Length: 443
Image (cartoon, rainbow, N blue to C red; front, side, top):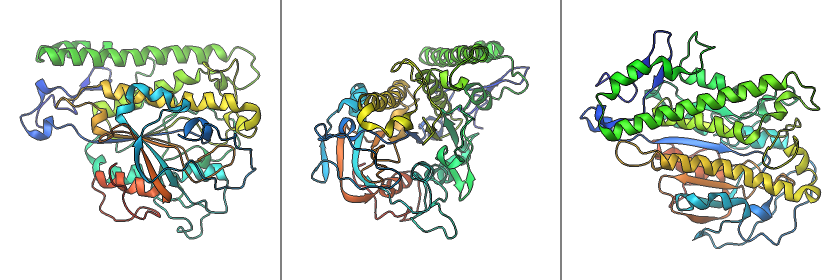
């Protein structure tokens, strides 16, 4: 390291706790490498597709799609001339209002379903896969190394974690396989396990060692912090205090969730205990842990699966319904649950928007924001939850280079074109990614 207080320096206490520092110019080496903010990749995966009429521009008057069993159907969306258009914030996209100038909505991107596996399992597990349909011999899954790990091959070697995988699925009582519940894979048949419990994720990220029962680690490093603060300029002192307070707030929220989990175990409930955890708080807490990892340089590559595919165990979407609901179950009865499904779509977009806004508020050493230096994508493996269509997927890109536009792609453009475009931003040298046909210009 160039300095004892470089960007990747850790404060350590006698108990072994470690806390990574934010980027502080006062302590940076004179080298440009120390002051130039690094680029990051992050992805937010939303399950079960969307209700098209609420999400996509130009489709508000289209009747809700009827459930079509386990077949994969191709349904055309609204007609837009290929190219950039003004961004219309539909009801499902309305939560993006505060960050609309930092996003691009992309429509018209497709994937091809490979016969032989469940629609939901393949749409999630193969969403980021570098395999073309039917490319992997002897496997029903078109699944090879996923985009996040391919990008990490380029930029992940300088951070404590090459990648971090987050999930907001606490259930362990379901019949589904790992293919319904994981979007990150080292390669065919080799899943990258996700961090699912907030406390375990916190301990993993901040090296709690044997201090499993001591959650508030900021107290453990307070003496080091005071010593460090004397070396900081006023602006960095403010940033340092803001960062520490954000970590403390994460700790408090983890403590509240742990207490809630404990209290629920003593109450007879109609559904498993995990179904009653407040969904919005759970997702936002895991999302904040992901942002903390990106901000401090613990990793430059992170994925977040906000919910599993075809998971019948219900969740408590606390701001929407009185009790736990099954997103997948409602998607099979779209005419009965249309309004509730529309609420769920807006709920997931709001969770993504909150993370985009938080990234935008974090200032880096060179004056840019964390969002300026991150490619942060929202996506789902189904274009419509009730018809199981693999075409016209809901995709939003936030961060570097986005200007608040709607990019309509020509019909049948592979989703892999977007992944190839993003991979190349991080130094990927190949001209192909899965079934890509070229890069997307202007994104």
